[in-house]
Length: 286
Image (cartoon, rainbow, N blue to C red; front, side, top):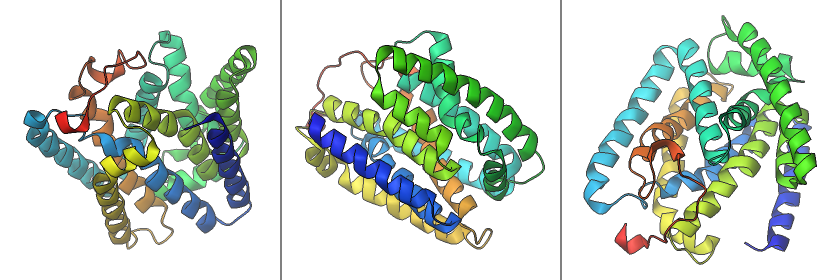
């Protein structure tokens, strides 16, 4: 993607996010579904393509098993599943988004993406997470998130200004300023999903994003359909749609977090070598 196209895409994303931020929870939820569940899901849609053919049966079995267990856990005990998912996500973001950084940078990057939305929106996030899980432990958890997220955001903003990193600055500012669902959606796309999609595209030898979508289209479509079906079934438990969104995304995200790193070629598990220039891996050889 060219710099000009990236700039246009970023402007459109911020414009859509600003409009969604002024809307109701339903509007913000719809924005998050599209941003996280459709656009953001594209980087995970290539999970199967990067796995060697001989290892795919085991990979698919583990992927499905972890997804089913995650969904079952979320339905049975959301009070525990919610914080566990947030912690796992923070670890994943830290390892993926700062692959060559020091341990402190990894911690700060992962913490910020998950916790910074609480900094100025404790009330809204408390309400949101109470719908996603159960309200018993959410208020103290959000208080800790606000403290940790505020400190992480300040560290990242100072570093972004020092190094003139516009993407990090804009993504972190979105996490701080916009309502939680919208802010996380923008931060997730700018700081994690879109850069990871570009890296996966390079890894698979795709000429452009259209080539990448053709290669991963069937998996991406299946994932979107699956999350839609899951969300529809869970709407009976939570008509607001918040818990179905969290549970559906978690059922697809957790296998991506826990299973895929052990099957990725040319690197150690959990992104220890991610970020270095890799050999191009043709889809036909996957």
